[in-house]
Image 1 (tube, rainbow, N blue to C red):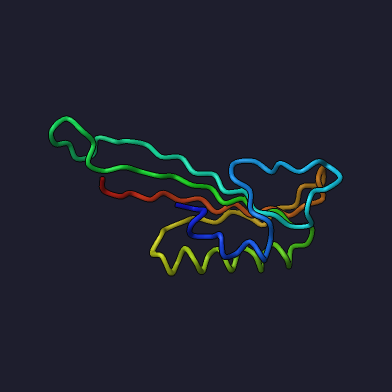
Image 2 (image 1 turned 135 degrees about the horizontal axis):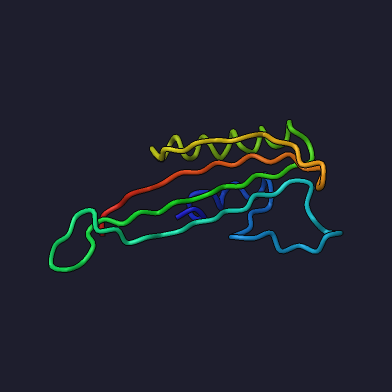
Length: 113
């Protein structure tokens, strides 16, 4: 789900699935990590199978400057809002160990089978 929603934003910053895979000397100035987890939950049962599934997701945005982090998060928030997906945002926070600002967007999507 996430890749299909955001692949058109890869021109803003590189997008990675689950983990950023670059060597330390080639880490981009800004990048996004998409994490998605799908669960079968028996919220509504019928014929012995789950009729409703849940998907939780994290969008981790990393950038060298707070301005770049905010511009990236604004683009991602707009896609989520246009899609009617609820989410929470945390950050930006600065990590002195990496010298990156990071923003976490997290949410949950429930859908039928």
